[in-house]
Length: 113
Image (cartoon, rainbow, N blue to C red; front, side, top):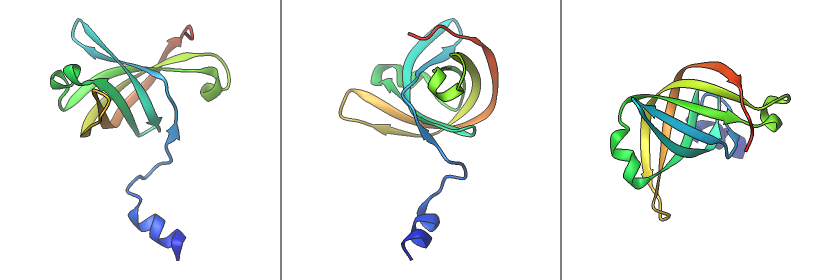
């Protein structure tokens, strides 16, 4: 019964993987730095500083730098188009943002920090 309850209450269609990776919002000529909490091929949850959030609404472009532990080869940058689904205030002067990934492509190999 517990597994049925879990599947009824879980709104996610795809499994997400907990990963703390650098994320960069591309807002015209401005780049806004953040980091992911979890990621799948259809969605992402990430954090931005509260003062950067007002510029993010609706559709947006972003880059995620994936480490070799995830790609099982080298670091790479993934360019994504997303749509904000939800924002959550946190106690750490950060805002959590859930977004649907509408399109993505591998851009290049990246240098891991």
